Image 1 (cartoon, rainbow, N blue to C red):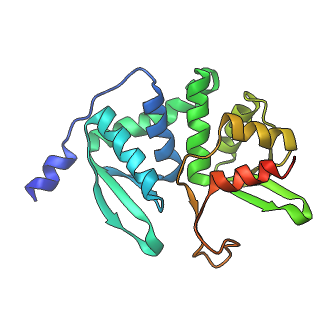
Image 2: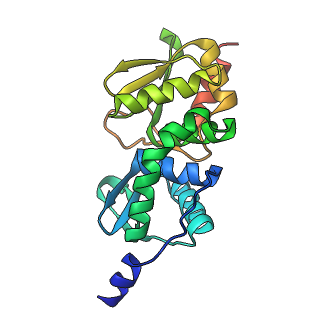
Length: 214
């Protein structure tokens, strides 16, 4: 229909300068997004995370999404624009080189986006099991995350083809101080393998884990 055509023909600003806002948008589309010929979709179960992305997309591109709902409570925000697809795909290729030597605040923003989207915590004080974990299918991307964490004095290791782990005491403490999780990013208590009996913020669990050292 004509409305759909207008959406896909929407021309977005071609931004050449990397800003924290642009790093935020590109990183989230990389980690929990998907592109197609007529638009880009961002997926999340955390409504606060969706609000942050919507706010940033409107601030940078004056663009509001079409929202739909998928399986198991996943929210899907699709930004219909072929111009946006080309722009995002180009910036996804550029960001890996830029972020290695970009401003520290930009690197922090990239790492926070990764752990907000792909991060988890394993905390069992009784058995001394304390880990911050991140998941991604690309080993190249995990290697980049590992390198960026070192810029903040955070040691990590790639444990498998899709997992990076921070388990060193000082590195976990530094992670909380330098990166952390954004507010209202929750563990999903409804998953079959969930150890939590209720939805709980990841940053709260991280704070408990750090306090357990003292």
